[in-house]
Length: 102
Image (cartoon, rainbow, N blue to C red; front, side, top):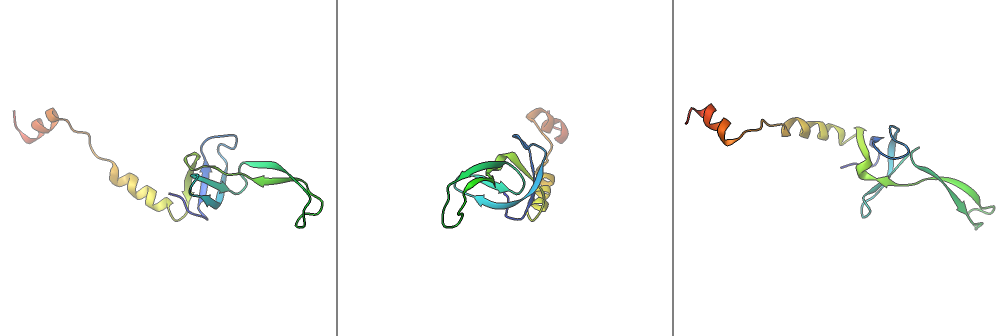
């Protein structure tokens, strides 16, 4: 789970290894927009907002599975859950030996 403002590292794609902060989240599409990552050139028509039009560089979204939280609100939670979920693997044979049964 990621939140706006978290610092993330890109795990896959053309920008692999880059870091940036999350600027927006698209929940229905499971995508995030990271500052300085996946910058694409978009052709814009002239409008009232942009009179000249032209080619503009815009940050496109990337899939949530391609980012990992480095710093932020959820980074501490992720570390905590990783530590608590590690358990020893046991089988029937090993549990019988440990308890003293035959």
